[in-house]
Image 1 (tube, rainbow, N blue to C red):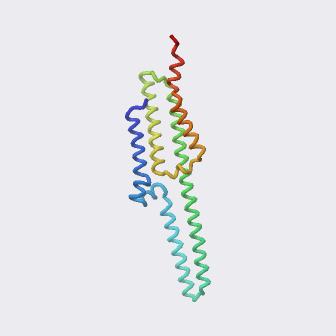
Image 2: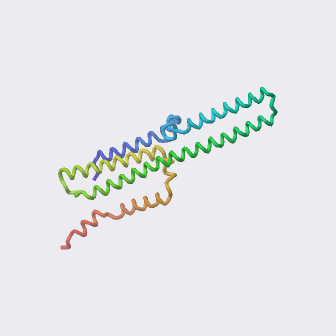
Image 3: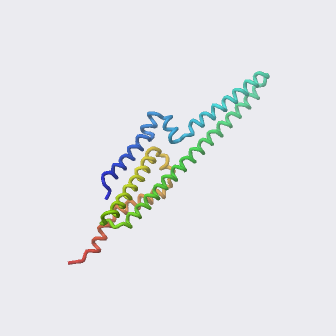
Length: 194
């Protein structure tokens, strides 16, 4: 069973995720939220400003030479095409960053599963060093769970990237684990009828 420290870790992770998420940090300081979690918004803005300056420079050069409106329209069309490319690159960069963060979340899940398996290898009734080791494994699992909760709550776009089948299987496994009291079944099978 987890102790209060483990539950405090989980609560701290949830609170950190809520405070760093779009509901609090995203509304209070949207630039800071973008910088922390998206980190490409400033890049997109700089790219657009640089493009606009280049087009303005070219239009002024055309005006100085007495160019026609057709030449100016062509420069404007080039600007629009370049801006569309910046937008496409921006979306691709955001998707890449979300995929990287999703890989971290899945890695945390794998680490939690590994710790859970390691916990089962230690006798739950053991005392001394094995009991302390089991307690540390439980605490490490809760710390990983708190970290995953903080990341997911801080950046809910990650959940949209998970395949629906993965989420459905995770929920099904959770419901099955809740519905089947494995510990009680074990103790019933070990008890002899009197």
